[in-house]
Length: 292
Ligand code: PMP
Image 1 (cartoon, rainbow, N blue to C red):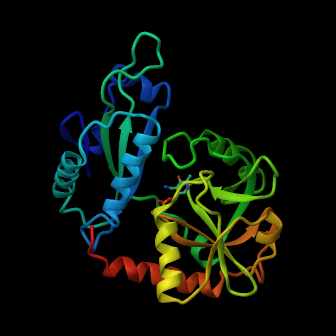
Image 2 (image 1 turned 180 degrees about the horizontal axis):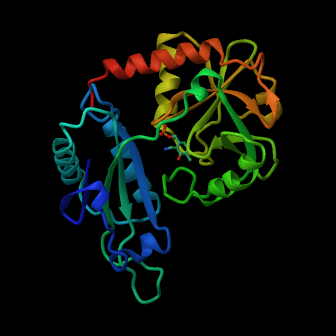
């Protein structure tokens, strides 16, 4: 696989970042990205336009100077896709804007950010997650600048090294630290629950979560193709534990069932029926999608 850095297409394994050219990104964490996937059979990045749009929106929200215009970035992405065209499997492209050089105060970025396009094989999630559902634990934290997609995952990693490990769980869900019960989003996914009336609930876009691209697609699929009612409203940990079904969404996971939260078993402990149906509908939607 080939990645992009400093005007060059280079084998991902040989990618070396120039640290001093990118102090604000590497040392200070002033760095945003989007993770999008070219699914093998399709050869196009799924929802590419939406990913690029979110990346530029993230840059704007934190006043980061984009390294290229959208048009030029798209040309570069085309060249990365072209260079990888003979690769048969799925490819994850992490399109990163990294802060670049700093002025002498150590905190003011100088000039444009740096573009890195990292091409990798997407992470292989264990089959167990799909067949048995995930076991998640809650962690009180709200991502600052939540509608910006940045590379700072320290709290989530800390939670993985502590509670996820201790409880032999598979991942974490952030609960609002202000009340310790409102479900926000996961480490790198959005969270949905289905109540006893078959209404689908997910946290609203009020600036406290990332606007997941998969979240938006799943809402559309529920409403348009499945005639299901979606309520973008908050719910508590207690409501989640007592719900009919729970699932999560992200670009690399599509939809994954959740069957255990904080040690409480959801419903009968098996992946929910609607969850499985929605997952299949989403994969089908993706297969039929040719749009950029
Ligand atoms: N929330 C966070 C914090 C994330 O990092 C991600 C992964 N990009 C998501 C939600 C899901 O977003 P998407 O569906 O666009 O992958």
